[in-house]
Image (cartoon, rainbow, N blue to C red; front, side, top):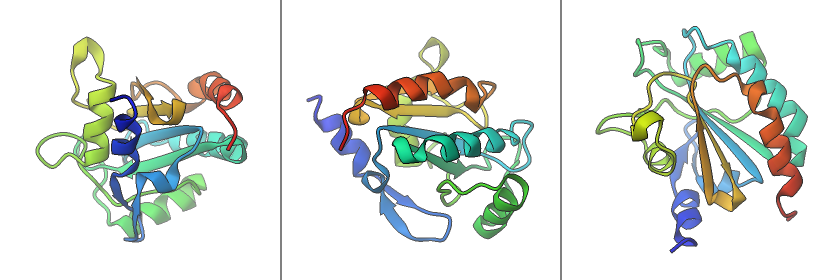
Length: 170
């Protein structure tokens, strides 16, 4: 049964910010940080730290995936092209961004449905409370950890370094 978990995860379809279809397996890495993002949020400056982590560790096996979402305070109103331009212009974002999605409710994207089932939040609640909730996937997809929006990306650096150091090489 344990082997099914990564299979489920890595077969999930994703649409990138340019409209191209991928599967999660296309982004398999030693450590994968998945974040629901927004351009008009108090946590938006976290893009800068996400990009710092990406630049430092992408060559060692870190993948960062950003998923814009407009479900919290209508803080991601722009088109996918507007979002990409904003992220590049203001924060130099070069890690993969995806088409705007929903992370809660009946329209929840399958990736976030999966991640929430593997790492529920406080008191076992699965709902994502706000923008910039983070999920760190490791152990070839068998381990998922969840971090609150107020957890700054650089606060995860030691954990990421540990995962990268202990993960088997390809």
